[in-house]
Length: 301
Image (cartoon, rainbow, N blue to C red; front, side, top):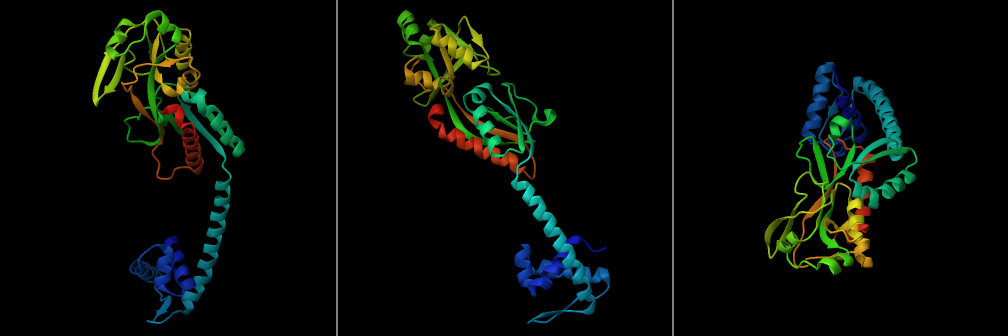
């Protein structure tokens, strides 16, 4: 039985009055279009077109079939137009999972603004530092500083996030200022346990050489804001994403340490389940978030 593709191609050939032009519009080779029309004629058992080197003309059977195909194509175009109109108006729900730092610093406002721009769209944003199973939990989009090793997920980089070692001036006044990573062993280092591992292993690069220092301290937390407040109170030294303390450093409330040693640097990614067709609402939200990160790039540098 003739398929919709062959019928649509037949109508396209008639409208274009040329196999070559119809092939161009369909994005196929002339040979493929010609073969499909021949297949259609064989299945129907009739000749639909008279072919000459200069022109095409319809047989009686071809004219009758064309009238039906033309009506079908018009209905298809109307249906596509209706879907296209709906796609322009973003709607439905996007379920998001984002880390607490990004959620509190940037994403809560950015995503809410996106919802204002698209009032028929709802975004359910969860602030969660754990690496949730996106497919199992029905999450459409996650913002992460680690790529999940899962072939069912796609990751798009948004920005590079640099970390910093810092403390309050009051801490330096009481305990002195370390000048090398090794001297951190003599200080109260507050651990950020958001990391799955390595909360007490602080990594540095110096003159292209990497080193790791196993620090210790009397306070640890998985919440960046709690760690920041402990540092502001002069309780110890912290090793955190620069974005979480950028404004404190600018005001002088926290002092960066070890300027000759580079702390870790991690990419921030938009992660979503693999799909052959990415929903427009998710794609536009990712673009909106990327633009927001770039505007605040100084916080992450």
